[in-house]
Image (cartoon, rainbow, N blue to C red):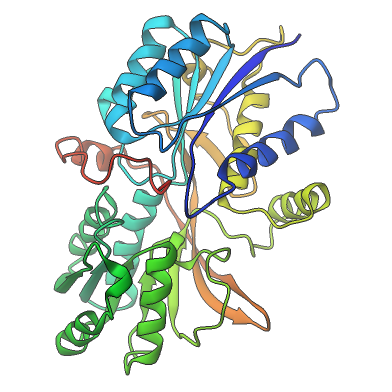
Length: 379
């Protein structure tokens, strides 16, 4: 049976081919089914930065005019409640895509809506726990004014302080990071003498911080624990000669699992390039679609309720949708960023169990939805 899917995809400076990367990952799954009745009719719409009312109008148009069976969309957190309400009112299924920079709230709950993310907030929380237990009780925060919003810094602080940690220094970069030397950051870290530095930067600003840290006397003396996007292999293309850089993520492209190896190998055969995290999201959403299709060939309207007890095998591991309808994995990977000959790799040095903890959502329920309007990190 044929069905229609609307894809509402944004632009991104960090991932300039985001729409195509996502589509490639999605099609990799849909094509592999070898069933022409399953491959859907895709209706693709650009949604800018996914920050304004036009996203809501396009989503409603897809339901009313195009009569789509499923919508897949990125969405800025400030419009997510409205987007959820649209699909709840029309009783139509939505898969909301995000990297996971905010903790979801009860207002985002609907049995018609799935939230597929990379769980960045949960990994920041786990990073705080790990840092306090393994590196020491004193941490310095080095935070971008751009990336430091959302709920990432609060998540790390919560995990760190709950396990006896203290924040001894906090640096926040200026908006004009291009003219920033980061000397103040380096000096503050040196003077506070922490056991670990939690670094919250990405893209070009993250590169500048790596370069400044590598040239300082801190390099190799204090471990640098970053958000996963700062250690992204597609962004870091030259050797900074930086040491002791770690990140905790729900994924690792260098992982030795059969699912990850097959995903990368098949993606490279199809598209003649390596996948990135956006491709990975598209691939997982494809797996979710296949898993959700009923025996009659239809996508269930209450897609979140339908998938509640189902487990999906993905390149990241066993994936389920929790009580907040957000994708979750049973483990996080502690990765070490290392330069091997011609490129950076995130080598998995430890896996950490991460059982679902609904109380983490509840504790963020009253926390404001801070950060920029755009979905993390599509800028």
